Image (cartoon, rainbow, N blue to C red):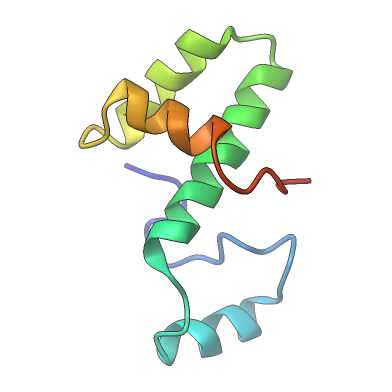
Length: 84
């Protein structure tokens, strides 16, 4: 099961829970973008634990079995790189 799937604030390091709830209740959040952000964050955390990139992607696939390995790789390496 993906992290924060039960509507906890996946952006807690960026915005308050209250702001997240307001944005979410008004459908102002893009679910795909939130998912991609969580994938990038988890990948970064796994890599900091010295897990190799391929194994980290496989571990992420356990949470998102509907995504192919290459899809996760593209989410991680292509597009907006501003995770810090």
